[in-house]
Image: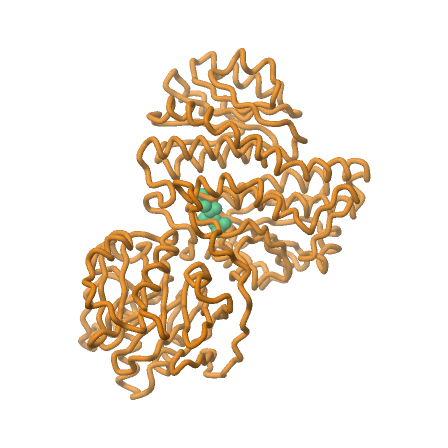
Length: 611
Ligand code: F6R
C-alpha cells in the first residue's frame, strides 16, 4: 500500500518518477506527489491520480536530477492535498515519502507538540519527518544519523526516502516491514516499492532488508543497519520483461492477466512437471520435503484470494496426502494465540509477498519453532525472503488489483506440492499419481478453451450488470471457487456478493432468493454433482436466476439453469483451475459495463502492507 519512487542520477528525475508512480498506482491511488530539487526543495502534491498531478505542475518547475514521488493509499487522514506525500519537515528543508504505518506516532507527535511543532496534515508520516529533523537539530548530526537515531525509537512499518535541501544530491532511504528496491544503473540509482519502475532502466537491483538504511550520494550506495554497521549491498539480476508490466493492447491489466493464464500456469509447471516421464520436481521445497511427508498437520496462512487458493489446497492435501490442514486468515491467526508446535509446517500463500498480516503470521510461527514455507509470486519479496523454503508461482507481475493469474498459479503450485508429497508418502498410488500429472499438463490448454467463452460470458454479464446482489454456490473443490467468484464480483463491480457451500444455502441464504437474485452455481461433473443439481432445483423453486458453470456435454443442467457456461472436463481436484476462469470474466465484464475502474477499484490497493 502506497507506492514510493526515488531517483538520483544523470537523467531528468521528473519523467522517471511520474512513470514509476504510474506503474505503482496499483498500490494506492488516493493522492500523488513529487519532491524535486529545483531552486530549492519543492513539493507538488494533489488528491487523486498521478495523471491529476501531472496536469498541475508547470514544465519549468520540473528540472531536477534528483527527486522522490509517492502514490497514496490513505491510512491516517482522508485523501486530500494536505495529507498527500511528500511531507515537509517544519523548516521545509527535509521532504519525505513513506509507505507503512508508524504505530507510536501519537506519542511522538505529542512530544513534538510540547516542543512547539505544528502539523499541517493528519498523517503519521509528517510526524516522522519532524522527528528526524528534531533529532538532527538537537544532535547536529548528519541526515542519515538523524534517520538512524529516529528509527531506533519508531514502532511500526516503513519504507521511507528523504531529501534534504542542505544536501541536494543525497537520498536517504530505510525500510522495516514495507518493501524497498534499489536499482543500480550506470551513474544513477532508482528506488521503488517494487521493481516495476526500475526494470526499464536497469536489471541490477538491491532489495533493502529490514532495519537497513541506504545513503545514495556522489554515485555511491552505502547501506548500514540501524546499529550503524555497514553491509555489502547484494546486487541481484532482475528477471522481468518490460512488456510483462504493460497492457499489451488489452483495455485493462485485469483482462490481460485473465488471458495470460494459459501461459502463466504453463510457467508455473515449466521445469517442474514432465508427465510423460512421471517427473515432478520442486527444487524450492527439497530440503523440507521429508518434513512435509511426516507432518502431523499443515497450517496455511493467507489473505483474500490467496486464502481461497489455500482452501483449494486443503482439499487436495487432505485427500491425497492424508495430512490435516488448517487454513487460517493470517490476520486472525496472528492475534489469537494459536497453538503452534515445534516442527509444525506453516505455508504462507501470497501474490505480493508483502502482505503485512501474512508476514506477521509467519514471523509468529517461526518464533514458535515452525518450519515456514512460502508460495509466492513476487521474487525477492519479504515473505520469499523470510521463509525457510518455498516455491515461486512464476505468474509474472500481477498489476490489476483484483487477483486472477496469481490464484491459478498458487493453486497449480500447491497442487504440485501436494501430489509430490502424497506420492512420496505413499498415500497416492503410482497409477493415480501419473494420471493426475498427465491431467495437470493439459490444464493450460483447457484454460485456453475456457477463455474462448469470453463473448458468451460478456452477453450474460450484460443481463446481470444491474443486479444488487449475487450468490455464488459450489461444493467440494468448487466451494473455494464460489468464494473467489463472489470476491471478484464485489471488489471490482461493487455488487454485493456472497460465496457459500451450496448445501449451506438452506441454512439461511435461501431466504434471499427471489426472481431478482442471480445465483452463480459451479456445478461441474464431480463427486458432488447430484447434490448440487438438487441445490439448483431449490434455487429455481424460489425463482432465482441460475447461471451454471458446467462440464462440457452436461445434459441435465441446461434444462434447469437460465444460463449455461460449459468448461472442459478435468479431474475434480484440478477443476478450480478451470471453473474460476468464467467467474473472473463475468466479474470483469460486469464491472466494465457498470463503468467501474476495473484495475483500480475504489478503496483497494494491491499490496496490503498495513495490518
Ligand atoms: C483480491 C485480492 C486480495 C489479495 C489479498 C492477499 O482480488 O487481490 O484479496 O489476494 O490482499 O494479497 P497477497 O496475495 O499479495 O498476499
